[in-house]
Length: 334
Ligand code: AHM
Ligand code: MG
Image 1 (cartoon, rainbow, N blue to C red):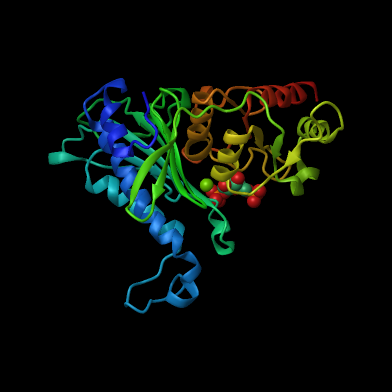
Image 2: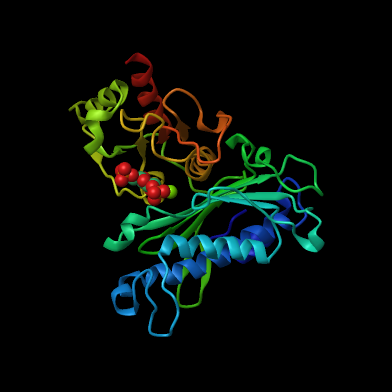
């Protein structure tokens, strides 16, 4: 049972037996993500000082090269996971191809692969608005002892063994699930420890927030246009409130706490939508379902889509169960 104020380290050790194939490997993997997230958090918090310390491409006062934060976050997560030799492969939104990691004694015998969006919503950094990291973990499907292949990465989201996100917001939080509900841990920056602040998070079954970039309205499919009209009508608990940060992790996190729906549909400009199935939609959908919510492409469950490409995009409708079902109804009837 999650105990409030438990540290993330204590929680991982105590709950290790819940993991399906308990060998300690998944615990060590989550520990590494926790560590990398602290390093990235430290850098994200200094972002406003970039004009003083130097901008990307320049050398700072200590003679170190400055990097864009998303490039930096990508390197930190990849290096942390590679150095600890606990995964057999990594795919990142920032990299064209997946990375093969041979592991201890070059044996290729690690079990897990990680897919990561190291810094999502990075266009928000310049204006001091929250950004996030999203991660997704699978067991490899090809034989142990051989290098990973594309097949290991193109698994449907329903085979994830764990997924989560870090939100670098007014507080920094890690929210993750290993298939036994969702727990949220808040960083105490003074001592660098995450505490269990949000045990067993549940998405309200319905809500009154809709989150969509309405500037793209003219390009939306008719079903989404009709659903937006429905959200704005005066009837019962409507009109709903519109809230859109433009940072998936933050928009999702708020909706999970307050109740709401997030939509990034396909548009006439982006016929497949904008968000990436493997790095963004699958892990967020996994958390959503673990918290009692729904995630769909407008017609079918996100987690049942069989990916065909590493950087595949999909339309994304995610949030309170009854709201997603209502949006799907509008899509079907349009
Ligand atoms: P990114 O991976 O390039 O950062 O884009 C993903 C982000 C999401 O966090 C956010 O929900 C969405 O893009 C916002 O897009 P838009 O500005 O088109 O509304
Ligand atoms: Mg992204």
